[in-house]
Image (cartoon, rainbow, N blue to C red; front, side, top):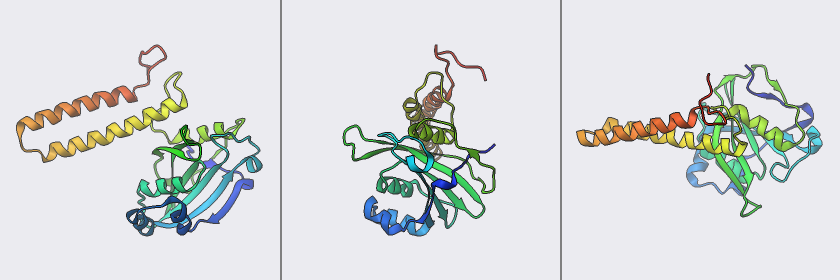
Amino acid sequence: MAIHFDYPKGAAFGRILPKSKIYEHGTPSSAVKELFIRQVEQIVWQYKLAPETVNLTGTRSVPEIQIFSISLKDGELKQDVLRCIDQAIPFPILFELRYENDVKGIAAYKRPSEVDGAKWVVSGYFETEWVPSDTPRKRLPLVFDLEALYTNLLTPLMPYPARPEEGFQARIERMEKICSRQREFERCEARLRNEKQFNLKVAINAELRALKQELENLTRPFSACGSVVAP
């Protein structure tokens, strides 16, 4: 099944983005600069989805959407690199990571801050699996504005489907909570492996059971009335 989109030729931008430009506006730490050097081969500003390139109205939240292609040196990329780019570019961005003959999509939900409209709030990142770069792509969905297009571009990246009557922002928050609890679960498992005292193992096991139950609740597709939707 196609999970990446076929962007229109009229939206092609195709400019190499020097890392130095990111550094100027993203103010990365020395550790993040080291990640850029070690992991990133090249960044290309591949497409610019804007009112004049895709004939869709922009909104305050989504005036344009940028598509960046990042070629990797060894197939690994820490999300600190993506967050630095998102901080440097004041528009929503979808990234396509490339390594050898494979590609994967990754992006965060990005919106203007309600406190300071000049700043952007960036969610956690959602991503696809790696697929061959010649995998067929989907046509862009038919929508009325760039905000709706952005929602449609982000949706395939999310690991769990929307619940009935769940708004997009609520779905984003639930996905972030799932990712947070999954990280907590992994940390608890590591603590359990390293723990020698029996009483502490019992306590950690109780934490794991509670986290597992919370994850099951967060990932379960509820109906509007709260009952579980049959698979």
